[in-house]
Length: 235
Picture 1 (cartoon, rainbow, N blue to C red):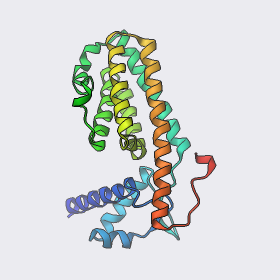
Picture 2: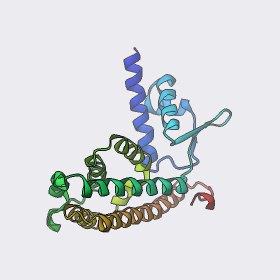
Picture 3: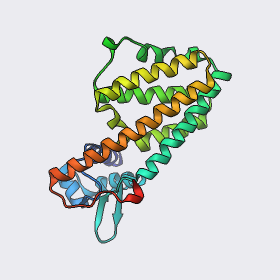
């Protein structure tokens, strides 16, 4: 019975999380456990487990009287996570250039250092490859704690980071910049690769913020909701 409840909770978790990622549930939207249970055709127990998991991960918030709601996007917090990514990836690249073997990243070169005609254009697929690129780069530096923290950051910013691959121009740019980073690592150009990584991540941060705000605006207009935009303190 416990195993079945856990499996149902996982299904509900993935369903609600995907609705948030797809902007079907947008910041400020309120709902009850009963509504989610009816939509997913399950009892309230797995629903409650799933919703509290999403709360712990920062996607939802709960109030005693008003029930559940989607947590507002905190762009200042996202920005700080992106900045921490820069620090970690620059440290990993520095370690690779000085102590590691950049040749160990050949598998990444096989994915990213290809001709334009061979490039992939499916956004979700490129997003998954992009996450793997940055995670592999950090892991190659050989510091387990650095890898763990970087993986946690990746999970926390995934909700907006994936939007960077909804535009073909951004996919093209990602291929170009990943090739540049790999070439610099191969040549052990520590300073240059750190500059390239910072520019790459900061450009992505700016782009996903712009796309997220645009998609939130469209989602609100489509739903007819009369809500205020995110406060200036969070943008």
